[in-house]
Length: 552
Image 1: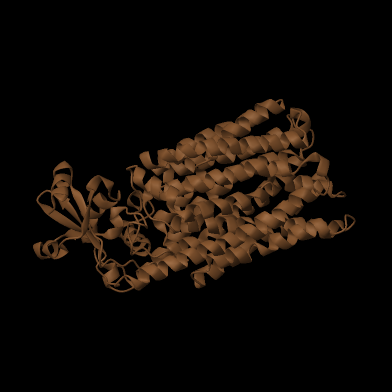
Image 2: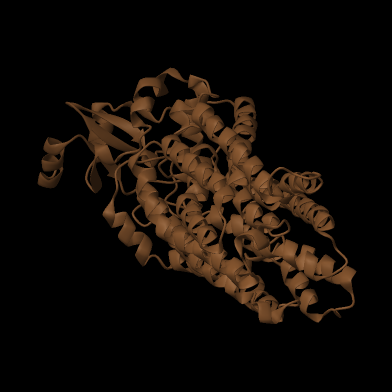
C-alpha cells in the first residue's frame, strides 16, 4: 500500500478500484461470468494480484446497497435466462406503472389550470389571457428555485422525500379552491412549482435503480404517455362536472376538489408501497432484490444510490459539455410547452366548439399521443441505440402540425383543429432525452447535478413559453407557432444528433484503449480483510471510469 492508501485505511475502510482491466457491458451481458456474485471475501492471491495503479475511496462513498449485498449476495445463485425474463417483465410492469401513475397525478396540476379556464375560473378570479400566462410563468419561477430540493434526494430516503412532496402538493391543490383573485392564483402557482420541481427527477432516479438502460429508454415513452394522456381521465372528469345542473359551488372548485382527492390517495399509495431502492422493495423477494441490483449495476456500470454528497462530481457535471447540450435541448424544446395549458383555449378560439366539446377533443388528442408513445416504446424494446434518432423522428409530427397551424386558412377549422392535435405529442422526445441524460453519466451526485442543470433550463423555457402567447396575437398566435417550429421542433432535435455524435466518438476512443475482460471488480477494506466487489459499487463518474460505455 502507498502512504496515501494507508492513511485512508486508518480513517475509514476503503474501496480499492482497479483502473485497468475493467470493462462494462451496457447491454447487460448474458454470460455466466456476468451473473457471479458481486460481493465476496477476497483471497490473499486476489489482493496480491491487484498490484499497483489502484484508486482508494472511503467505504462511506460506496453504493448504499453494499451492506445489503454483504449480507445476501453470497446466498443467491446467478440468475437464469428464464428467471431474468420473468424478473424483467415484473419489474417493468410494477416500476413503470407506479412511477407513471404518480407522474400523471402530478401532471394533472397543469390540467387544473387548463380545464379551469373553460369553467368560470377566469371570471371568478379576475384572470385575463396575459394574467393566466403570468400565473404559468410564476409556476416555473418556483420550479427553478425548487431545484435546490434535489439535495434532499441525496440526504434522505427517496420514498420519504416523495411523500413529503406529494403531501404539500396535495394541500396546495386544495387551496386553489380558496382563490378569489389573480394574486392568490399567482401565489399558489409559485408554491406549486417550488414543491413539484423534484417530482419527475425523483421518479427518474427510481426507474434508474430498477431498470437497465435499454429497459429505461424503451419504457420512457409509456412512462410519459400518462402525462400526455392525462387529458383522457381529466377530460372526462371535466365533462362530467360541466354536466352538473345547479352545482352548490362553482364547477371549477368541484373539479379542483376531485383532482386534490386523487392526489391525496396517491400520497397514501406512495406511503404504503414506494421503495427507496431495490433493497427495501416490498414487491420483490430477497433473491429478486439481489438480481435487480446485479443486473442494473452490470448493465450501467454505475451505482444505484449514494447518500454522500460529492462536490467534485458537481464540478465534473458543470464542466462536461454534454450537460449543457442537454440543457440547451430542454431550453429550446420546452418553449413549446405552453401548448399543454393553451390547448383548450385554442379549441375554443377556433369557433363552433363549446366547452363541453373541447373536453372531448382534448380526450381524443391525449389518446392520439398515448398511441404514439406505445409505438415508440415497442420500437425501442426491439431496437437499441436509437434514442437520438427517435427524438428526431417523434419531433416530426409537432414540426408538421406547427407549420400547418400557421399556414392553413383560418376558415379551415377542421384542418386547424387537426394541426393543433398533431403538434401535441412533443412529450415523447422530451422524455426520451430526460431518460437519456441520466444514462449518459455515472456517479450519483453527478447525475443529480445534471438533473438540476436540465431542469433549470426547462424552468427557464417555461417562464418564457407562456409569454409567447399574447392576447394581441389572438386568435392565431402566429409568433408562438413560428418560435415553436424553428426552435422547439427543428433546432432542439438537431442537438440530440450532436450529443449522439460526441458520445459515439467517446465510445470509439475508449474501445480503442481498453482490453475487455470479465473481472469488473474493486476491493473494500473491512477490518483486517477485504471484500471483492463489482466496480459499480464504487460510485465513480463516467470520466473517472474510462471503461464506462455511453448508451446511444
